[in-house]
Length: 205
Image (cartoon, rainbow, N blue to C red; front, top):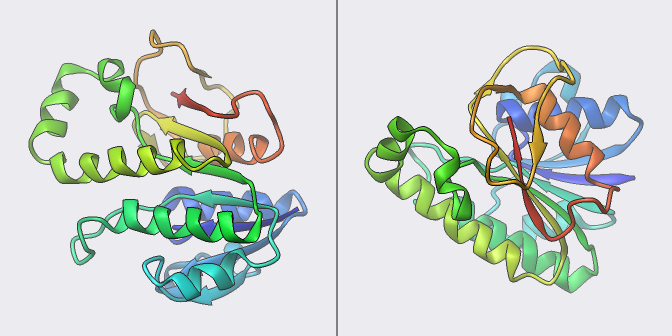
């Protein structure tokens, strides 16, 4: 399978690239700063550019079978980078016929607001208000896309190796907790071909 990855220089995105390559997939990644990539991920086909540039998005998706979105916000980025970038990706997928889309957001977004601790709810309403609003819009675009989508909502992300010891599902009783980026990446790669959670938002913790 050939996979396009957006947000590949982040911690989770790099894990997705590395594990996809190890599994024998081909990877194309749109990155703003290739120097932020680890040695293990530099075997991917890199396109230097910006997810807000539709032409560069199209070049990354061209010839692929599935798309992974692991976009995040930085202090110097526009407030709508995540949602508008995802919208650009969806538009390109619709135009080219690429159907499978796996998008990483966060527990606390959408109908998962009650799956996070009270302290994090307060952070969402204050410090992270704009970031979470951008993710809310991102999820809306995905859900209305008509694509074969899966939304993955991790709890708190941590570094470290893949353990395989994590909880996932669509039940609202699943509460946020720490999960390694490597475990999230492994789950994402599984869902590039699985139909188990198509059209659903899945908690992983």
